[in-house]
View 1 (cartoon, chains in turn yellow, brown):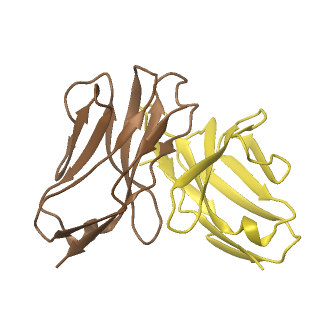
View 2: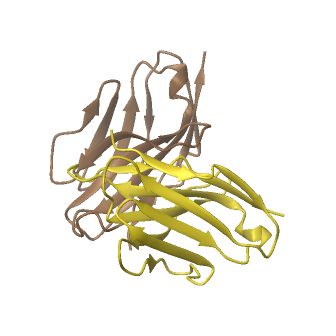
Length: 116
Length: 117
C-alpha cells in the first residue's frame, strides 16, 4: 500500500532555533501533501497544503514565515518551524493523496515537537 | 466553510458488543467524501471507512459500517463485535469532491472509544 514516511518522530529543540520535519512518499508520487497540527487530546487542524514545484497554500491564521514549507520533488515535502517557541510544541502530521484512489489519503506517523 | 461535529467526547462498550459513534457535518457542497479515521495511542492515522456522498449505499468494511443520511448531514459509524484492538480515538472527516484531492480534510474533534473487557 501507499506509504508516507515522516521524520523525525520526536524532536526537542531550544527556543529560538529552527526544526525541519520531512515527509516522504515511498512508493508513489505525491503532487500534493498536507500538513496538520494536533494539540494534545484535540483534533487535527490543517495548516497548509504543499504543492510540488509551487508555493504552499496556508490556512487562515497560520504564519507562513513561521512554518516554511518546501515541496521540491514529487516525493518529498518539508516543514520547517523557524525560531521555535514553546507554544509551537505540538504533534505535526503530514498526509498525501494516494493516486488512483477515490478520495484516499495516507498519513505519516507524525512528529512530536517539544520546544524548551 | 464546512464543519464536522462529533458530539461524543468518549464512548465505552463491552467487548463483543456493538457501538455507534455519531458525526454530523455542514456543507453547501453536493458532492463530497466522508471518512472515519482511527488514531490509536501510537498516533498513526488509520483509515477505517470511506463514503462517497453520491453513493446512496452505505459503506461497509468487515465489522465497520456507516449510516449515511445525506439530507440530515449525518454520518455515524457502527462497530460490531467490538474488540480490544478497537480502542482508540475516532475522527470523522470531510472533504469536497471538487478539487481533485487538492483539499485537505476537515476533522471533527474526535471520540475516545474505550473497550471494556
